[in-house]
Length: 92
Image (cartoon, rainbow, N blue to C red):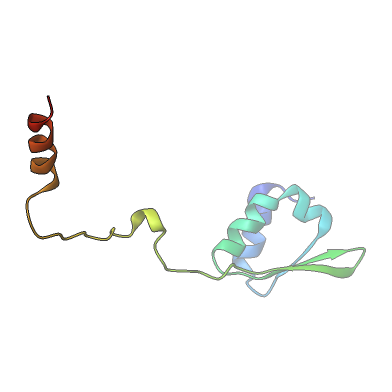
């Protein structure tokens, strides 16, 4: 039974240790996922048999749509605001 500090310490000082039991994973999931996020691959054992391999997700560098610049509309002629004002003034 590892406490959080000891568990993390074992992983950081022994990079070759990339296997955890299912019970250890359940107790220390946050720390295990922190290690995976930093690039480690972790194998999870249940009853001595490998049941899962947790690997870092593929990184997509593309910006989300809301961060990309929008399209710039360019139209020749009078600005739309001027056309709206003229239309309002012309209406009775």
